[in-house]
Image (cartoon, rainbow, N blue to C red; front, side, top):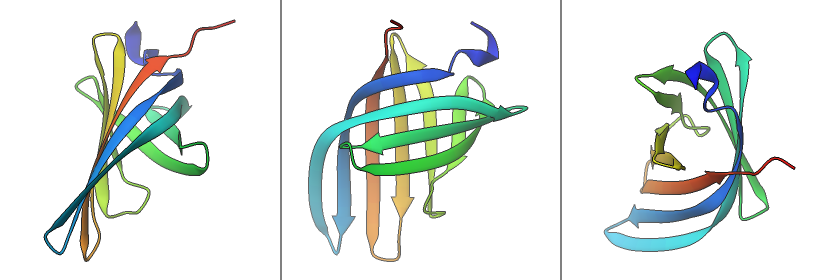
Length: 111
């Protein structure tokens, strides 16, 4: 597979949990992710959430995991393979809200 194993397009679902002022909220939805190498060891991850919100992160590979600072600048993401699934995790904290978002993707079939 080599270091290009992440490159491609994937489709899947996410679960999101937020904690604000002691109140916990969970939600879920669908998402796609496209990963491309944009420079030596630099991977652009473009996620489209629920078909409307686009999130970009720029990641590096460490121990078979793509690690990035969240687009907000207030969190971290990890992307890795778990069997046949691509897992993308976001942990983020704004001044008042903690957020964890777990994505599970399958690679799109080539036509």
